[in-house]
Each structure stands twice: as C-alpha cells, then as structure tokens.
Length: 250
Length: 199
Ligand SMILES: Cc1cc2nc3c(=O)[nH]c(=O)nc-3n(C[C@H](O)[C@H](O)[C@H](O)COP(=O)(O)OP(=O)(O)OC[C@H]3O[C@@H](n4cnc5c(N)ncnc54)[C@H](O)[C@@H]3O)c2cc1C
Image (tube, rainbow over all chains, first blue to last red; front, side, top):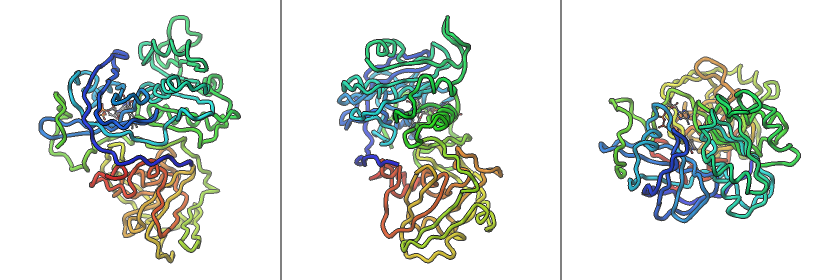
C-alpha cells in the first residue's frame, strides 16, 4: 500500500462554537473557530474531547466537513440515540461554548486536489461528511477530475447538505450525485426503498478500467458491503479507501 | 484536566473498571480498517517469520492448527477510543512460533494479506504477550475482524494486532507500518495514551 505523509505532533487546541446549522432533524453542522489550526486535507478527521465539571472526560472522532479555511473547522454530527457525546453536540453545545480538539488525523482516507484519476464516493448516513469535504475541495481548487457520489440515506429527510448537493450537481461540471433510499423514497421514485447493491454501484460508479479512486464511508456494515461489491466488480482493493464510523445504523 | 465543556455531564458513572485515558467501554466490536476486507483462501494461507538474515520459517494452516494453542482472555483498546473488556480468543503464542527462530533483531515488521503493515518491538511479541489468533469467543474469527487469523497483542492499541496476518519480518531497525506512516505512534501504549507520533 502507498505511504502517506507524516504529520507533526498533534496538540490539543481549544475551539469555540461560532455557528451551528441544522442539517436534518437529527444532525447538526458545527462551525468552530480554532486558533492556531494548522489546516487539513479533505477526508481527515479530528478528535474531540469533552470534559465534565467533575473532571470526567471522553473523546470521539469526527470527520471534517469542509476544506481548510483558515482557523475554521466544520463538523457535522449525527445524534445517535442514547449516545454519550453526539446528543450533547447536536442538542446542548451552544455558540460561544469551548471544546477541545486535536488534529487533523488520518493520512490515508484523503483526496488531494492534485490527483487526476476519477473519483467514486460512496457514503452512508453521516458517512457523507468527509466525502462532502472532498466535493467542496474539488470545486474550491477548480479541479476537473470527474466525481461520482452515491449517497445512501434512510429517508429523503435524512439528506445532509441537501440544497448544496442539488446546486452542485447542477453547477459543478463533472459531479454526478445519485441517492439510494433504504427506508422511504421520495414521491415518484422509480423503485421501493432498498440498500445499495451491486447494480447501483455498477450503474452509478466507474468501470474498474478507469482506475478510479474509491472512498467509502459510513457505518461498518455499509462500508463492508460496498467495499466487497467494489472488489467483486474488479476494482483494485488498494484503490478502495474506507472509513468506518460505527457499529450499526445506516 | 482539560477545559470544562459547559453542560456536558457524560454518562452516569459508577466505579466501573479502570480504562486507559480517553477510552470508553463498548459491548460491540467495532471495526477499524483502511480498505476492503481481504478474503484469504485457506488452502493458500501461510504464515512466515523472516529473520534479519532472511531465514524463513513457514507454517501452513494445517501446521498452525497442529501447534499447541492457548485461550487468553484479555482487554482490548482501539485508538478510535473504544475498549472492550474480557474478550476470549484462541491462538498460538508467538513464544511457540519463535521457539526455533534464531534472531538478534529488536523490531518486528508485521505484514498482512491485503497489504496492511504495522511495527512494534520484538520484545512485545514474546513472553506470553502475543498470539496468532484464529478464534474469538469460541467461533472462527470473522473476516471483518481479521480472520482467518490475526495477530493479538492486547497490551498495545489494537491496530498493532494486525488483521489477516501473513508474516513477520525481524529487523534491527524500526520501520513504520501503515498507520504509523500516517501519523500514528510507533509503540502505541494505551495507558500512556500514545495515539499519534509525538504523544
Ligand atoms: C474516523 C471517524 C470519523 C467519524 N466521523 C463522524 C462524523 O463526521 N459524524 C458523525 O456523526 N459521527 C462520526 N463518527 C462517529 C463518532 O465518532 C461517534 O462514534 C458517534 O458520534 C457516536 O458517539 P456517542 O458518544 O454519541 O455514542 P456512544 O455513547 O459511543 O454509543 C452509543 C450507542 O450507539 C452506538 N453507536 C456508536 N457509534 C455509532 C454510529 N456511528 N452509528 C450508529 N450507532 C453508533 C454504540 O454502539 C452504542 O450502542 C466518526 C467515527 C470515526 C471513527
């Protein structure tokens, strides 16, 4: 496997919530101001550390949703029912509140704006987050590399960045977006809800002969299935990069 | 102590078992991998230890099964913050595999089916600290979790326990593996929270 660059030492920094936006009824984008933030590559994540009054603290990883932009770091968090951290970040954490984070972390699940091969992005649920950073970075860098996104959601109401994706699919030349709905489809959708399968990946992805870079992100089961499909369709396993977010869901 | 995050309470805490810093307890068995899960055909499976003088010691699947195995019950700690306590495995101790291997090397460079690699000091593989494991909870190890066989080095962060293990190269120098090259720690002691280079 190819080697990635070695980043320097990662220190904890204090970020402040500048702005929060609802993406869906259960997911929220947090825009943090992080003085001294060193910048990041699309696809990388941060570790967030929360500390309670009594000194108890816990950490979770969250992908960065937007390309590097000075000292701003954008995350999008899905509230996991009964979760310890995500309900706090989506419902309680308020503008002006501080939080510790460090990063950027991860040098493998990244897309560089200088890369030339076509790109296939397959995201399930909150797995769209690092993929969105790649889509946004592509446009910001004026890259013309063809991108295809297959985005699996439970229902039409669960689509993150819905307006922006619609606009980009129209305006960002060379970006195709297709949806898969697993629980409930929009009116007039040609088939009933279903999970992403071989046919979807074959029809809406790239042929292996084009040697695309594939990025698959989401709940573990989703990533396993899609990565297996890509390999079965003939994609080189070394070109299939995965990020597994959690045990279930999707 | 870190800065307090206003309004964050965390889960109700009783005096549970002590965990390494930054870790939380899970009953699930999450998965950390960089790519698709390789499927390894058993008839072609082999495990090879290569010494610093390029001497190779090889085991087929049947060879491995013929060796005495152990059933360690251990705690595991993943760098993605989860810990899982009291997991039971079955595998062949590295002490058994190394018993006929003549080496003066200090480091081990572990490689896997699928191209994954990781590095650690050889000493951390010996003295009852590491196994080539092929069963988890009494069942054949699922491919997602590294089956047919993975390295098990529970005292280090779990990425050192290379899934789909294929061989170990013994070396005089410490060559960074896959996650280590991407910024993770060369040693990875969870109790000292050595997640990333420089920790
Ligand atoms: C590299 C990386 C990047 C990530 N990026 C994002 C991101 O951009 N946005 C985001 O929302 N999350 C992301 N996650 C997941 C995140 O780190 C947490 O696992 C998630 O927010 C749940 O934490 P919690 O404390 O709320 O739940 P916990 O208290 O940890 O868990 C509560 C219950 O929910 C289950 N659970 C845990 N995680 C998930 C999950 N992801 N889906 C469904 N069930 C789960 C647990 O098994 C448990 O039963 C990422 C994870 C990794 C490893």
